[in-house]
Amino acid sequence: MVLNCEHVWKEISNYLEGALDPAAKAALEEHLAGCRHCTAIVDGTRNVLRLYADDLAFDLPMGFDRRLHGRLDDEIEGRRGTAFGWVVSLAMGGLAFASLLMADVRDAGRPVARSEHSQPAQRAPEGTVAVAIQGKTFHVPGCTFLHGKSKLESSVEAIREGYSPCVRCMHELLKSAGGNAPRNHGEQLAKEEMLERGE
Amino acid sequence: MAADGHPEQEKEQEQQREQELIERIKRGEKELFHDLIRPHERRVYLTALAILRNEADAEDAAQDAILKAFKHLSQFRQESRFSTWLLRVTINEARMHQRKEHRDIMKPLGEEETEEGSYTPQDFTDWREIPSEALERKEVRELLARALASLAQKYREVFMLRDVHQVSIEQAAEIIGISPGAVKTRLLRARLMLRDLLAPGLTGAVQSGSQVPKGSKPWS
Image 1 (cartoon, rainbow over the protein chains, first blue to last red):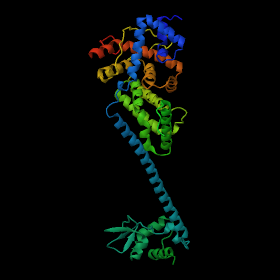
Image 2: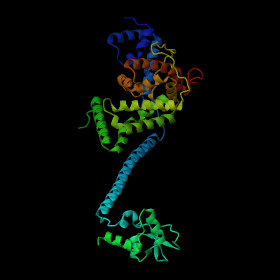
Image 3: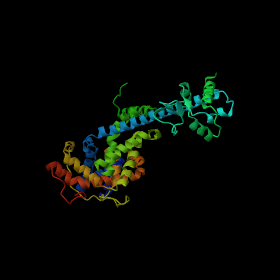
Image 4: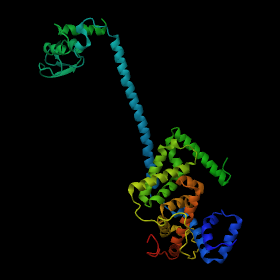
């Protein structure tokens, strides 16, 4: 088989990779023996492959490894952080849900109100009354009859401490809740307190 | 038992170790990804560099590709080798960076050529063997990098995979998403073009430290 230069150029890759069958390889080498140009091309191509395959041919940028693994660390930590965040969020959500359940259970144990005045909507707002420190009454926060320094506490505590409800604001509160103001708010609240204690 | 020195056996053991690492990472030992990626990071960077031809862009793309591989490791089904999958992720990532940056301004050699036409060598300089020690010289390494960068992307990709990373023709075809025949055709052209580009300049650079004469090559 006689090869011309173009045949050789087409087969250079196969020749260099050892992928030619023996007959084709012998024919190509026969051509090379008499062709300076093709020999130069084959030798040069072999040189190219050897140089590029050398580990020295390409450098990694300085600090490449450090920057890459730093970023990877951030990603791994970030993922762990996110997972931790989820755990915390779930725990918080669970706690909140448990609190709601507990409150519900507590409410369920509460004695049934026996009069319209003891309906929850008509009760003095626990935890939101403002007690006049220098006075003897407690008020709905923001009541215009509240003067001087005040503190916030539950109506039950206010009663226990000897404070009486402000007739004006408590009356307004009960009216807005759709009920009738009892004649004596202090007495009503005290009754509620007793009910709460189960007495 | 320690490896008995057979390359094939060592390769198999290495793949088995890699496989175990992947399984442990998937089960939650995320830190092991550092160990998994270390043997591959040079290949990832150079593959990105072959496409983007800019060190900073290549580093960004390489990092993004590796992070993507970390995030999507669960999708790696071991139907192919991890290195094949990783290089495919890298090529896609580098191509995405390329589209984003619109940086492919330099018209590379062979960009408009069809693969069907045969390539005719243009330089018949008799090239004496260049010793590997020549690579210790920065200008020689730069010549190689610039010659490769001057080729069209389709040639840079196959040449980097096959002749720099030494992956098989079939693996290169799988990574790029073309047929093995197309890989061979592109590879032949890439090799002949690089020889043409480097023959006179590299010999000169190795002998005298001079650069390629200005204007004689596409990158001048």
